[in-house]
Length: 150
Image (cartoon, rainbow, N blue to C red):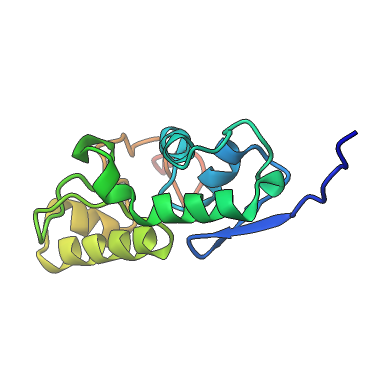
């Protein structure tokens, strides 16, 4: 009989600790910038069983996953990337880890700087994407309807 191998509870990929108790394609979504579809593509490109537990994969398979994550941009078409046309360089990129939040903050700061509508909405803390604000999205202490004084 095959001996039960120990499970690794944390697997480090792309500066992120992934949960070893979850299947590979679910655990990979723990990396910022990786959703379900991207995780499945990474597992297929790395030739790893996506349904197997992350903590039970071999070191060689983990290295293949790390290598695929590092070279993801060159292996997939531009429509599969989370930044298909970068505003500044014009090239296609896929952002992972801290780059996702840093780039988002940078984009919002540029919108604020050029005083576009979305930048002004971000500054004032209001809804940005055209949602209604009359009744939803209220913050602060005021609750209810203001009535006229008689």
